[in-house]
Length: 192
Image 1 (cartoon, one colour):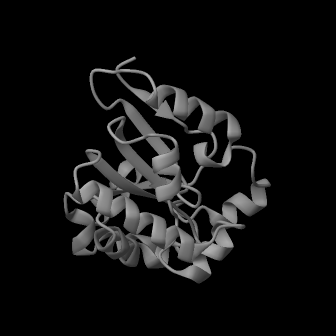
Image 2: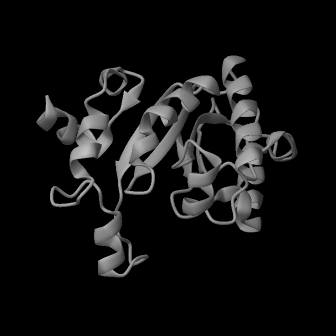
């Protein structure tokens, strides 16, 4: 395989199975880096990078963060450790600066609990050396009751905080190439 995505269904570094798979992939000769890692980065530290032999095998790293402050992170990423996350993001930024892989992206699933700090999220991504940020609309994969989801879904036009989200997305930084608005792009276009 020329490209292998690990994973979009849970953190690969929190799974013994996926760690074993990553180690086997890294131990296999390949014509170039082919791993795209998608992680919450809490367990993706220098030790994991070294123990799994990832050097030379990683093409890109996408990190689901969803917050720019420890308080919001604690609410949205229960069980996560914000300080550990920051340390690991900085480590990845250093690896990226050394050309250990070619893309470092921070992802944010936009919802009522975090939209007010999206500009700070962009600043965080720049500070840790990410190549860009990617914003995504919150989806309900059966995680929330319908009433809970409606309260979180700030991208919905009838949400009470929807106008504030539109004001946020109209700010200059969200028009830069550094920011991939993903499926939120129509919301910025509507405000323009």
